[in-house]
Image (spheres, rainbow, N blue to C red):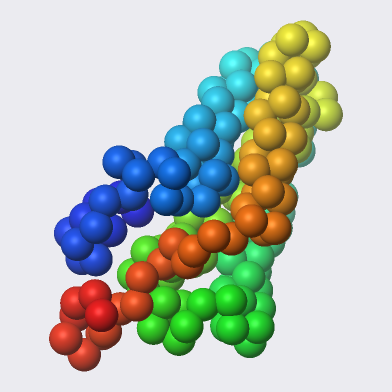
Length: 163
């Protein structure tokens, strides 16, 4: 979806420029996160019942943590001038912080934590899950120390166009 927003609203492509994007976006979002979701789905078939993923309060907690993390990151980056104000308010940045973060954190935490701890799906599937999770964290860590550019463009909301 972020690629559609970038193409339709910001008039740029993200997928065709792996060297120009953050490693965590290009490799993490496109490879690690889907692989983790697949591992979680597989491991979920081997969960004992009842389990944490069946509790409503757990789902609400995971959703609130995701929303809080996305909003907190957005505010932290704004206060620390990681991006310009118009970059911070670009459509892809807003979508990333207020939709992508909450959704992925909710999915990975609400189902991922219970299966990582209690699934009887075997050590191989758990190794895949943890391997991609650690890989995703390492990609984010790398990006944190190697910011060669600003991924988000300046966006002018009054004219609804880049710039």
